[in-house]
Image (cartoon, rainbow, N blue to C red; front, top):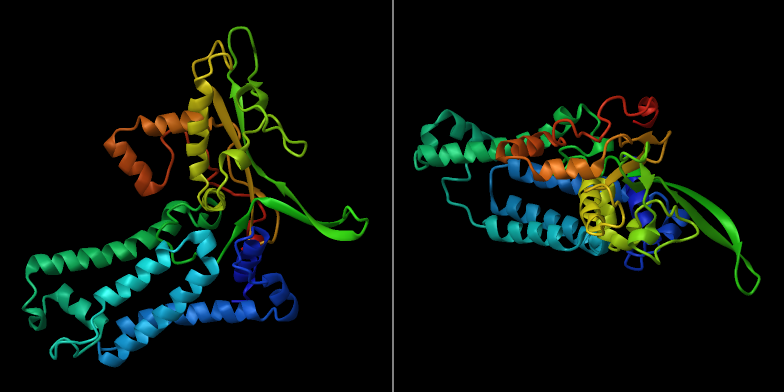
Length: 359
């Protein structure tokens, strides 16, 4: 409620050049309370839309109130966040509100709230005699799914979803926590004309290491340097043993996706491994290379960084195992948001001893 998550998100937009020209750092300097206003405004509008639909009998007034709150909420999101998340989310929400929320109500349909109507559907009240049994079952099933998918998140993650993002796609907590995999230091530098200036230095704590597995002639895995498969991507500030993710993943949205959903890093590792495997001279005695991941994250900008990836698990092998699952195994992996059996690379237990300090 103190606006710290909102502040971190909008300040990161400015750092990455997707702030639509809004000087969030200046806003933070002169009016830091603005982020509390934005956070509370989002809470009021988001909760208000639900209350307007659920707790009041449908009427012309409640429909107009809902549409006004939906327009305000999603218009703000579309303007301030579209360069990061795109227009799809706000556009679909606004279109759905306009297309599927009737402004005129049948005289017999507006006698009570939506909560009471759901109760009538569940109990088979005579008041809904026009709804057949299959229509009622479908409606109740749809409502159950809308409740079950978000509730799945804390259950399958054991409460660690702010770190692991397990079951996070249908979430009610997207603005309640954030994580970072970078250490930021604000230092000083000198411009070409000799004037001192402020400079931001960042150390990334997420990287992927491709290796050649040990063979009969070697006892240990050997690192694969960038010059062997993507020459020209070496940089003095980057480890040449790591995959050049800044070159391979050049979209800010894709970088944001990998930050929110760490499981996709295994997809990246598997895809890159298949490309490197096509160069037989890279690992002449092995059919498949290995890719290991390092990922440390900090929650809400406080406390220590926690290791998220098991550094002993081959991400490329995990991705190959995923692609070879049968239908039922795939459904299990999706439902539980787990890697294939024997290939789990997320540390799902005891994510750092500092969790109590960062919650």
